[in-house]
Length: 207
Image 1 (cartoon, rainbow, N blue to C red):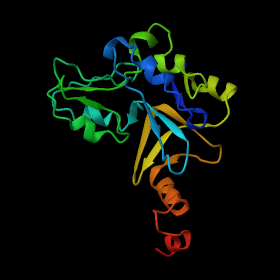
Image 2: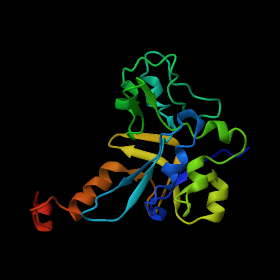
Image 3: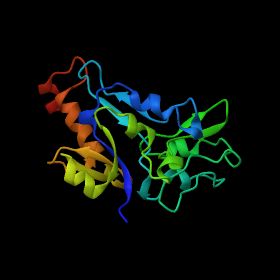
């Protein structure tokens, strides 16, 4: 059986935040959004990026691995759940361990919260709220084969942080020429193209 998951395509995001509004309807965190729409750099670009939990597979859920209370569980389908309120000890290890910066620590509730892929909906065959609400399908829910057959772009579930590759259940959609999401390489490329204020492109190359 094909595994359904989220495909996140920043090139389609228009920053409307419909995903955030829809996420607040999730029963597990009613009134709070676990999806974030990030504005990349308003000085240089109008680009926006929807950020959801990537549900890491290899290494398996760093957030769960560092939890001393085993409060973060993983379903048989590979969905990384938010912390169990009865077990979470508010140590915030998960917040620091996540390579994507996804978990939110609720100070008042003393609990880690994050996207659980709308598990209560997806187990019934429904879409996650964010994917259902997105008007441009920047967040799309389905399986890999369906995506390849219906959409443009290269779905990639490998993100490279320096020497550490992270394989995830959720896919980023990249331009066809990019085989993987190499964070360090992209940061260097961006730094060369958009040097800090007061530094010219020529100076950046010299440095």
